[in-house]
Image (cartoon, rainbow, N blue to C red; front, side, top):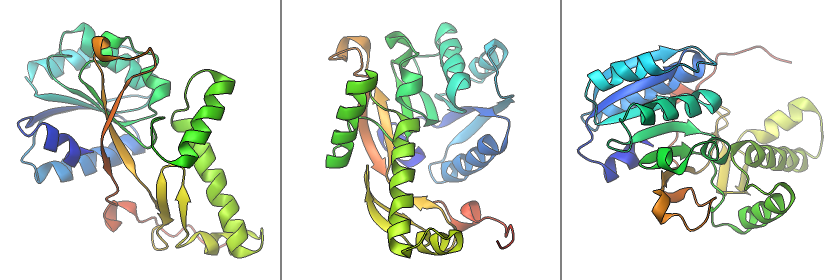
Length: 249
C-alpha cells in the first residue's frame, strides 16, 4: 500500500499516523514505518487510540498541528469511520490525503458521505469491481440478495471456504493434521486471482488493492465509491509474518 501510494504521491513525505492500540495496529504501524524508510517518509506523529474510540477531536488536532502531507489511519470498522468523519470536520481532508491502511472497503465506505470520501485512499483485500469471473459471479449473486455489493467480510468468508474445501480435496481427508499439511503450499485461483499459502509462515499470499475514492461529482452511481488504482502482492518479510510454535495437536 505504501509503495503504490507513494508512486502516485511522491511528494507526500510527512505522515501522521492514527493507530488502533492493539496487536493489529502495532504490527501494521511497525511495517508502515519500515517501508516508509525506503521512500524518505518522515513520520511527524503517531497517536494510539483504544478500540471503540468515537471521540477523535484531540487526536486530529494534534495531527493538524504537525502539518502533515498525509494522515494514515491504522484502524478498522467503526473506529475508521469515526476518525475519517472527524478529520473531514476539522478541515484536513480533502486538502490532504487520508489513508485507510487496511479497510473492510464497502462496509466502511457506505457509512461515509461522498464529501468525506474525497481524497480518501483505501487499502483493502477486496473491492467489488475486481475483474475475475469468480468475483463477477459472486458480486452479482450477493448484490441481488443483499442490495449492497460485498466488502471484506463476505469476500473473506467466500475465500476461506473455497480454500478449506480445496484443502479437503488435496488431503483426501477431513482429518485436522492432514488438512493443515495440505494447506501448506496450497495454490489455487481465488476470487481475486492466484493465491497460495506459504508453508513456512502459514500466511496467505494474494492480491491486495489500493482504492482511490471518487469526488461526489465523479461518481456514476451511489455505490461508485472509487477506482482500484494499484494492486500489490509483495509478501511481508518472514520476520513480520512468522509465528511462534504453539505446540502440536
